Length: 143
Length: 140
Image (cartoon, rainbow over all chains, first blue to last red; front, side, top):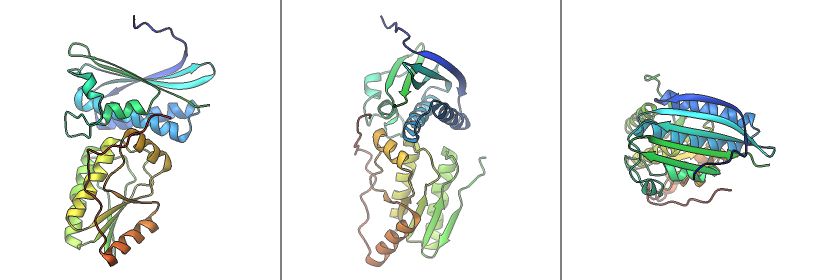
């Protein structure tokens, strides 16, 4: 039912392990390079990198670390970046609650997930205690 | 890396902090400690925090700026955050983080003017960091 028709081509990809602060900085820098290569302007690039930072940090602090897959997309001549975050952590018990502004399990402002969602064009989240958390974001280059 | 510290310079009655490296938890913690100690030791009345070389501020870093502003205010020193890049400002607001209670200025010069003005006229402190306030806007 969730099967999506691949309307886009994947031009390249890069897989990164994210389990510590240095990894967080590395994944941010990689995302920035991919955004630049896709012709993103500075604001679009900053939005994508900030969303990546929020989600990678969540993965480190709640999911016990995981992987980030950065993919360069093309659809009808438009380029975009897709980043998939996968962890094997305990999962998010109540996704609806976690997606609300102000909800925070540990000392955050609770802006991580809802904030990241506002910074990208597509946002998908799946989470379970068995499978961990799986988040996919896409930001397209405007033009 | 864990021994790295952000330098804090004294300029008259103010302290100047320039953040030029990627902040992590450890560095943020050190900065909070060093800065509050320095405010106490020097009796500084204001702190200028130059973030012009930061190309992203996520909620972690935004929270850190808010916390530092609150801490120094309690010690009777206002913090002014200066030099935010426009793309960072746009992203912060969309993220839902408007840095309530944090004074900002376009550059060090204007930040300094704010601090001097406050020192001379004993201006009212900004509101405390209110984490409940959010002015998120939709994606463009």
